[in-house]
Image 1 (cartoon, rainbow, N blue to C red):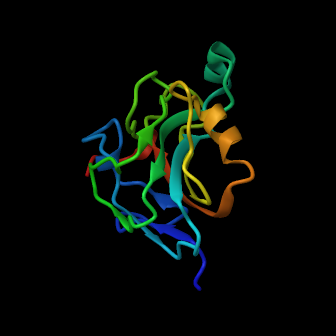
Image 2 (image 1 turned 180 degrees about the horizontal axis):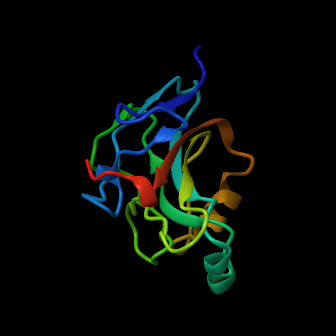
Length: 165
């Protein structure tokens, strides 16, 4: 079987995310395609985060990365996440304390102005259950021991020299 892959028709891994999917425009999730889901997969989890947040933000919020999006208990039958449509599953609070997608929005007044955004996909051997809405840290902890396969797609965004598309 082919390996688990996550791709987007809007950008290739390591390339610039179109501004349509950022705070500078529509701020909707990009289309994503999933393939190579391993046999025995019961659910999928998807996490998007930004490890390149400025030191000032890290220190002020006591975080190492900004959480843009996290959804778990996604059906393994899902092969396409449509543009602007949240996949069916359970959402985790993002870095703004809300559920749902927050597009790239690196603060232009801080270095670095170019940030990497990691879309991380996990094929799991079980559904995940929580008594309360989990944080991303709690979600990551719950993934341990249940990951059959994982992959990532990395997009880049730089507000200092991006053209609104």
